[in-house]
Length: 364
Image 1 (cartoon, one colour):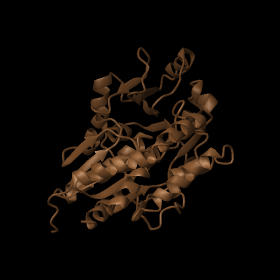
Image 2 (cartoon, one colour):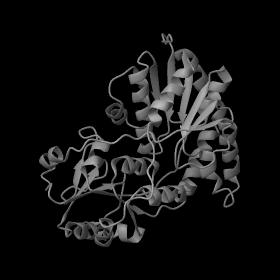
Image 3 (cartoon, one colour):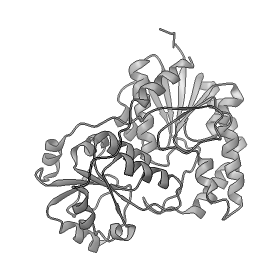
Image 4 (cartoon, helix red, strand yellow):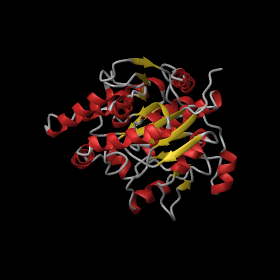
């Protein structure tokens, strides 16, 4: 076995969404299991308690820092394009200063490899020090933002900055449901990172007072603006039990809010009968590996949407729900139609976490 003493990884995770955190945590778990001598320095503004719950014990440390903006979201479905541009322009106006600060951090920690999912600034800092960098993802921010350049030419310089940074990556491990990702000079496709959860239905029923004999539905959003009228419509669906994972919750409603530190998200998903969500990499992956039907809503101003919808229709039992119906709490029609759908057209391999861990270790 190679000698990993005093060598460490800096693993940068965008704070854009929990899906990036879940897949990164899966890879870090695999690193801990296969190469326990390697230390992992996790850099992200995702909650450290969430990441600790996902990863478990191992040689890792947390640092709260963000190097990209992602998309500023009005809620889990709608984004604020103008606010996103303003925030990323503010961040990138200090790009040189931030890169220099990150160079000092990497040198001071004795970092031997930078892994990014999928900010660009850490890759540039690594290149400036001659440290190898590995990117992991299914899209780059250059591609996401390129949609907006025809509307506002200010986006073009942001797109160019990301392409310049991504162009310095040693290797991209490209996940399924991906765009071409041409900004990265070397690309290797790997399977899904997601792993199935464990059904804890009896435990959740006892914890929440829910009826395990009903159909269980997970409403998987970070935020969703249901008013009292929408909640009343959901409450009238007496054949169902509805669940969310905090921070999404409606106190004094019929909807049970679970704590992801108490019950891991993958276990929640394994315990329900179907999911209502937006198309996102994490939730689509989790539904596939757990074999759960997905009722999915529209998602605007996010180029990944079309790719993910194609994957949903290929690999999942699925029903599309209009956003206006979702916001009104009108779920009955979609719920009634999801149970008699044919089996998915195809299956998808997993094990990308182990493959990624071996690629990471190979740099040492």
